[in-house]
Length: 336
Image 1 (tube, rainbow, N blue to C red):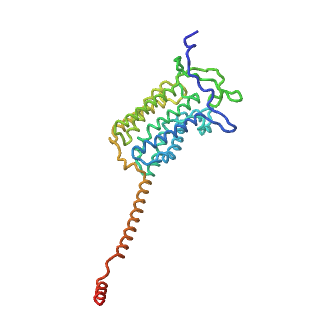
Image 2 (image 1 turned 45 degrees about the vertical axis):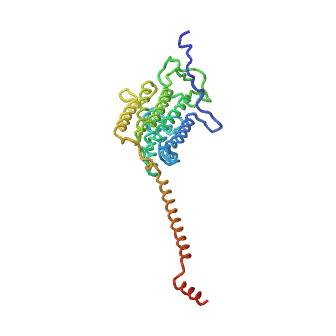
Image 3 (image 1 turned 180 degrees about the vertical axis):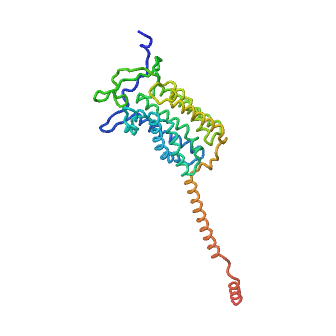
């Protein structure tokens, strides 16, 4: 018996999709939703702690999440276009978001555009907002990687390490091979590096580091968000070097490797040149919140003016009688 035969490899889930009547419950979508909810709740707490208005993160997410999902899918399709538009490809499947395939770079870019629109509408600075939601977004990315585990995707090269991941053969109800939507037959096709797990653990480590830096230093103006981007890029660059699944390449190098390197340089440059220190908490209040405060102040002022008028009227009623009236009273008293 070889040494590799006794290693306890990590098993993959038997399936990633469960059908309840006509409804398909997908683990991939579930973990993305969980990640979004966690990032909104935690992000809102961080935003309020910095001086922002409660509920702002949810309002911004209404814009950022749809933009992010669209951007993530566009990036995936653009960098893997042969799968959909090459020989034997199916262009309509480019719209099948539920089948997996969301590029993080496209999600962050277009998600940022959506957040910028929402921040302008509320009158708050986007860089400061990014500092608040940076760690929660990275935590959401880590949670989303669990969905890749259920999909048996984003894994690396073959390995004999004891933490290697078993990839099972999956078939559909008709017995046809279906790695994404099928159910495992128990046959192990290969054992690979669980690069999605490496990225998940790296992301969690960067989340902890960002929180510690944010507590110890007065960092703001988008610089913490830049550290999130730079930190993630380092891990993603390393992970991409370990993968050997199909991907669009430039000069023999995976396009995501180039993207990670370029965005890392841009993030570090922003961190260096951006304004030091942290924003005045007063500048983080939403425009709606300021308008409400102004309206409340105006109402208080009007109430104060009305009270003053009543007081003045009461004072007038209690004023001393005119001198002529006093003279009549004195003369009446003398005559009596």
